[in-house]
Image 1 (cartoon, rainbow, N blue to C red):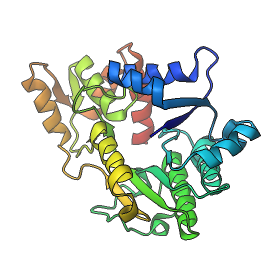
Image 2 (cartoon, rainbow, N blue to C red):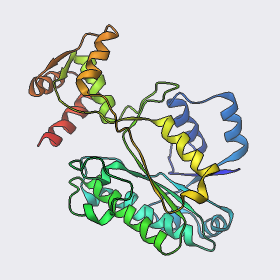
Image 3 (cartoon, rainbow, N blue to C red):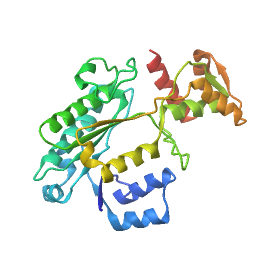
Length: 290
């Protein structure tokens, strides 16, 4: 198996070094993995939002014959930006990937979507919920763009393209390394609560799924259950997440004192903390509360 990774260009570093840096940042790099990357992974500079994925025509056409399966995970995750700001990567990028999958030979598509396409007021939603049933009920630009992108994938599937959609919940720390995406909302909530020694007193069921669980499931489908899974949608999310107050209790059990206080008091407190994480979270939280 050979893997080709499309990575956006960076004036400072090569695409291969960017891939390695990302893996190292997540605490996943091993000598064996570095050797596998060297021998079986090829990185290509491109951009899903651009015509021909940002590739020259000859390279694009070569890849349309060379590639057998596509995993589309590229997305701009931002809960604040409006639809138009996210349209390029999330919608146009998906359309460009679908064009690539159809070009010259059919290439099955694994599409990584999000549970954000399901309105937050709906509970116990099955995988076969009609995508059209939620139209107009999604309140932020990210959810709206991912809904439209899903619609494009489903339409292509109806026209004969083999597709599998994975709706991912909040991807939390790896079970093996404990490393968490430091831009993640829940990570920021926990980080700033520890920093301030205070946490908002919220009756909130926190949904998060270990990222390595999701990755393993997707690879399992890709390598062993592909044919039986064509046309299906999988929900990779934790339906039994802990309550926020329970998480704070666990933090205290580890010897880190954190006290529950009213939300506004907590927001006021984190506004005094100079860390970029807490400043970012405060802005995001204020918009969400509004």
